[in-house]
Image (cartoon, rainbow, N blue to C red; front, side):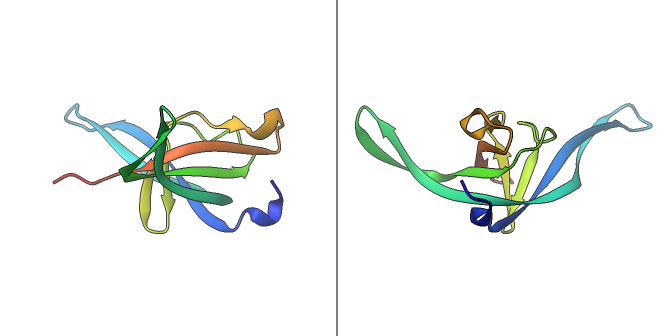
Length: 109
């Protein structure tokens, strides 16, 4: 991975829980920070040596190493909301870049 490959801008939003005066818990997403990333979309999955095409779109995201990106966070990318599906891990075990997978959130209703 080369730094020049980080060409896409993503925003990381962290989910915060707050209690209202009536005792209800409300979860809100707060804009935390934006980073440059390499985002690769794919919608195929290998299964028993065969490629299965799926309707949902998954993403592989690589960005500079940060300790404050977690699996509960929401990623905003090109007017899409993405949910991180695994904890970010250092690329090649080095603390230079992290890589994680995300899937597009579909609003219900």
